[in-house]
Image (cartoon, rainbow, N blue to C red; front, side):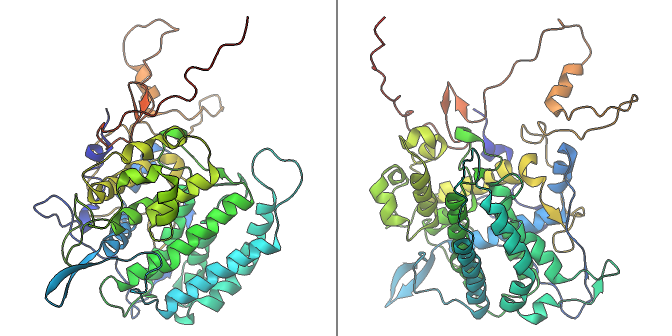
Length: 471
């Protein structure tokens, strides 16, 4: 079985920010905050990834370094902390409804921004006419948001953030607000395709990372700002997009179907598994196995009542709960990869470690996802001088090549690096093709998480003894 954990082992941590411990897991790194005293030239974010080589360059870019640094930073903040109470060692954890998190004014303002966007759904009800895929009213909602967004940013973000820097790249002057608006608007789904997926979720992560770089969250203690971002902003954002998906029946964007983790999201599984990992000290690396003593078993995700109980406390279970809201049938059939992960007995620390590496391999390294990501001055399309070219894997060698013009003037179809292998020297029958591997995650005809051991049998088929019709 192909092991995504091993393939992503080196690529998952940007070289320029990596500090590895003896246990093999990276120490905590921080996304930089820009110097307010220095001039900054903002750029209108544009798409740069058009083919497989573009993905390969992205994995060595400053943008990729900053994205992964921010993911790891947020993840580290959600891991419970060891503390002393009356001489006894205890663990401080942070649930979604926790009173232990004090939300700063910037976090509260962002909550209000998301709440306002949520209220706009009430103003644009779903179309009642016949449709096959997606509800066209989402385009109306998106248009309303696009029109109101400049004023909303002015209302809910400090003026010194929106006016950060003094140089621009064009005659009209590109501002911090311009870059922020691109990432925020790109985080709600596609009005053209009427879909939502992990690429849109990545855009919201970039919006939050851009705000971090501009200094919005400065002045708080270790981990406090990050926990406020995850629980105070990211979780309300997830609730908004889930409402958009259900209200406007948005299709999954770039979904792997049953061979993927989730039709729409990935980050809640990272942050949610971190919430249940064993406690650490502030400067400790992320644990690689074990669980918080009171954490629910991973196997409980298949139990609807257990999920209902935990979804208000934990991001992982909240994501599972949404799956139960929108899908029917046995969990092992509509979500076989999550079903397989539920059999891991080494604890939430192992699941968290695997989720981070899987995110790198299945989201950031996949052309259908990152092709839509725009690059500006805050997430730069520039080579990270400390990065090394990642070794070729099945993830990087199966990316499409960019269309090119033939001598006759007709554009050839994009082809994958795998199909290029068919042009190797040698004679073969004209109808012969190279063998096709099973879809990723398929082992002996059963879908499994790429990094989970075979600890659970596949779910039984539905109605295996259904009687045949009378003939």
